[in-house]
Length: 359
Image (cartoon, rainbow, N blue to C red; front, top):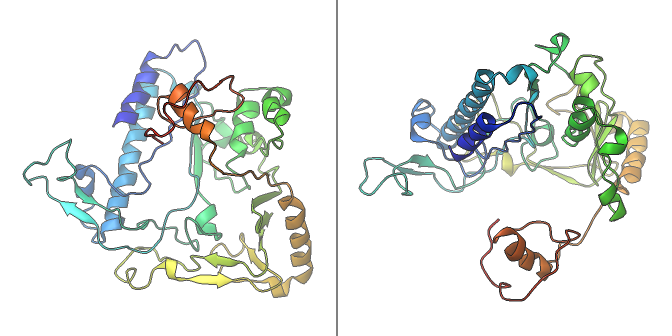
């Protein structure tokens, strides 16, 4: 409840004559799987441990969001708020790696500061999610790994857009221009990152989606998404480079994981694209049951060329450990990693090079 309490404290102490940008990056519906015991009890009818705890985690997150939105309404902030809820990837559907750990609150020595007595905790494989009817899951190039739900709410949403569903293509990077330009009203020049440009970084890959989200039109200005150097989506079509493997190449049913998951998990399935590449219609065939590259040779050819063109724009850098990063963690951030280049900092000594760091 630490994050929830901090969020509520920020809301209650905020000077409402000034704007507020508040971002809550919850770790709740994530790995490892753990939730307060009272939430686990609500789903005792779910027999599979991973799925039961995952239900409890999401239910817990729902309640925390309810606490936050209720506080905003109580304080008179909701009617002037744009509330965004989104995810960064599909749910995890990997194999079970052993069994979950369950301990009773009646065990001796249990309590808030103890690792025991909190019901079921699963730290034995990233499992428990269900991306039905999509194929695959987190870490996969299928829609189950890269297609997510999102919503906007609050008084700032125009009446015409409330209660509607938008199908236009949008990338998570588009939230930057959408919020900065479309909502906050900054100019394009103000939104551009000139510091990054002067440091040799590529231009922003972000598009203002507010006209679509606000109901002014139903058409997305984004025509394509380059996911990796091997995967491109253009309109309704997804193309994957020839010969590449697509992991998690199966589907979970309406109830997944289930009794057969331990012996037949989605993680056991791999698909390799033919030499010309894989092609899927992710609008007409949302579940990606049909690979149709052989039926559309000209489209495959054009998308392969576009993938080659766009992939050249990918920015790469070495991830070799820089000793100055470790020193900056101690001298600037109290033992936590953070930016250390172009921040006006000069190292002082080598005293903490081998000390403990927290991430």
